[in-house]
Image (tube, rainbow, N blue to C red; front, side, top):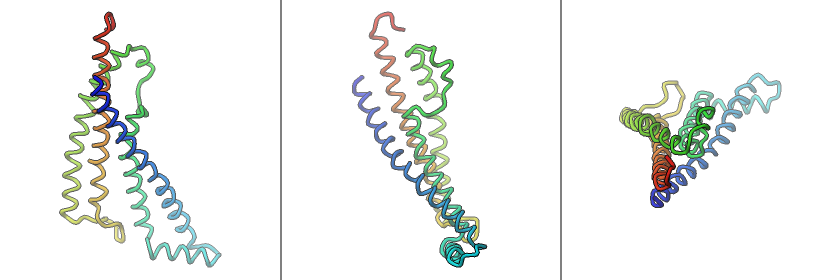
Length: 191
């Protein structure tokens, strides 16, 4: 039982570490979005320096590239923090009902949810996500917009990686719930 807890803790720590690093992408997302919005609106400014900044932004990046970079960063932020949110219990639950259940009942519900819904969904989505990214790479897919970002496969590869992290978080939670059930069976009258 202690071994399961150790394995689950190591998985949790890895998912949390990756989630914390990915959370910093939020700062980049805010900066890119603010830069894009502000410089796009400076083209009609009465100040020469602001018009020049806007013109430079359009030549160097283009609004399309910045907007695509925004959704790339948003995708990374969301997908890489899914597992973190699950480990930290930040996902949605129906706590009004859940509070009334015993720890054993909660463990059974969690195990059922992980094995019937979370892991099958992650496995299916990872499988399709890998095919999605590989196909994009083989086609040398780029942005559909003129002047957009190249190498669309990079962002598509984030889908199976992010859902893999969520699956790992689910496995860690599953191991912990198994230990709850195992411990409850050792205590007389605790069913």
